[in-house]
Length: 268
Image (cartoon, rainbow, N blue to C red):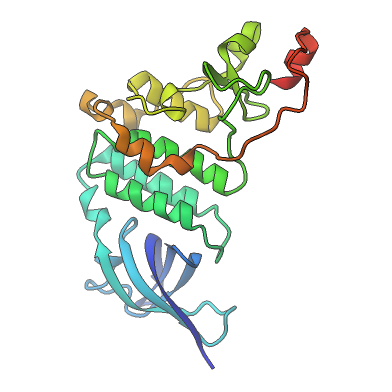
């Protein structure tokens, strides 16, 4: 008795397996990250379909659920890989996103993360849209894996306004007033991650630095982006990837009246 499932998936990567086969890894909406053999995957006809970032519809088959199995048939739905070949920055972001998705548990569905990845892939065709989407995607991935930032309220006072920093120790937001003399030890929270503002270049770099837990970020692959790539970021990116800001609300257990330096330091 065999087992099988059919689903839409994003290609994470493929490598040769034997002389004519390929070992394909995908991220499916209802079945999560999965790998299997593709018979004839090394052929000229099949290789273009197995490029990283492509959206496909495929069927996985095996004799038992714990076997490697194989994918057949595989139908190309959206050739995202071909659309980013002329954009080095988007190509680097695609490779980075695929590598990060590989950290997800195997055969564990993450439908929210999958939907966000598809939105990001579609956005690569728009240089004025995808940089901010990519930042939100990475923060959303952390949340889906259980390491999300809490940007809903200040860790010290519980206030929801004037959030300007993130504590590198707790991953929680901190307001301008609560940061005080500890501001230089905190990470800057870009305004576009807590609202629907249009980020400028500096805010995008702050967003990349935030998800890396660093004070600054200046990757060469993004420095070459034209200014049009960071302008005109409208409401679409904030709505499409709202999940990226962790929805979990952390309850501040301390007293909001505590104002000593010791209590402040412990809360940040």
